[in-house]
Amino acid sequence: MIDYFAKVLRAAWNTCKGLGLTLKYLFKPAITVHYPDEKLVPYERFRGALLFDAVTCISCNLCVKACPSTCIDLENATIPDPKNPQARKKVARVEWYSIDFGKCNFCRLCEESCPTKPKSVWHSLDYELVFFSRDEMVRCWKAGMSWVGQYWDRRAKQFKDPPGQVRIMEVDARR
View 1 (cartoon, rainbow, N blue to C red):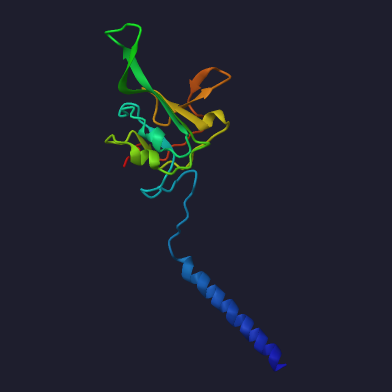
View 2 (cartoon, rainbow, N blue to C red):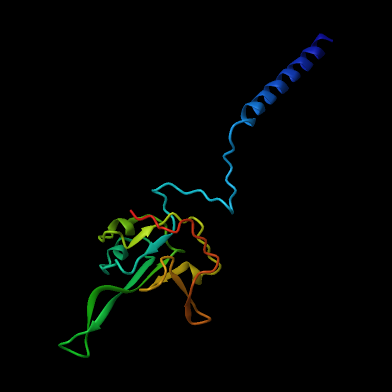
């Protein structure tokens, strides 16, 4: 009989300890983020989606050489050579630039090898990159395109903006 009351007393004491812990955290401020409406801003060194700025790129190919997964490709811009009208001469601008996010391992070597100030390729703070098909994983940039890039739609035979792309910040953080 004494054993029975000891068990009841221990159970009541453990219940009071649990309720005390609940009351301790009941009046503290909530740290919950209401996800669709509010978004967390990642730390500065977060490696999000790669973005590209065609205006600052000097087409040096260092990012292509530094990429271990060979997911970056670019083509230098050319102009007609005044001495030889049939030949073309390379200039320090990029014609187009593409990154295959299906192959990219977000190692940041392309960003570190970029010699321009500010960097022409950099990791943004975007963590909500959306792909609905394999074609959308290969992003392409040309002069005048947005920083998110466009993808080549094989069926429509044209560049399209990625649908469902959610931006965290309007101003992109560059390092």
